[in-house]
Image (cartoon, helix red, strand yellow):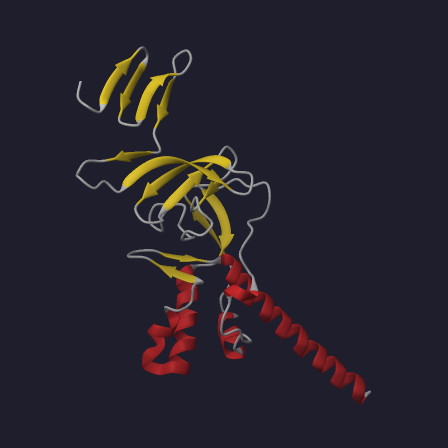
Length: 218
């Protein structure tokens, strides 16, 4: 059957790879990498790797270069090699999952070494965003509470226009809090909550200053 193909009982070998019987109703695929798709240079494949300090076995989905996702019995990682490119998304801005059920709160990267140009939040930005009010609304068939992305966009544009004039759009687009795709807007609620927290802190400080002034006058 060719120089690189051989048949044995319950086994087919192609070069150094093989497919053989592995118990009742199962097969074992003995190959380092399985390419998917046609052409002479397919870039999509599946391969088995050892991952982490315990060499835990994982299945990696490969899409050229270091673009991989590694699946183990208890985890899903954006790459099989810690030295490889990190990142990736679950879902798309226009094609989202309905629910994510978690036992613990999401663990968000916040190390100082990932952050640059650290500064206080401009007071005039806090004042402008204080105009944004939470709403109650129907989404699908259930009631929700939250903010309207267009309200946030409007407040950001008013702030940026006053500060930067014709360059306002350039600066509004730099805010990760407001995400825009081709047709829809979305928000990073955690960042909006930080701004609201700073608004409350500023208001408490102003109240304390007034109380201090009244106390001194008495």
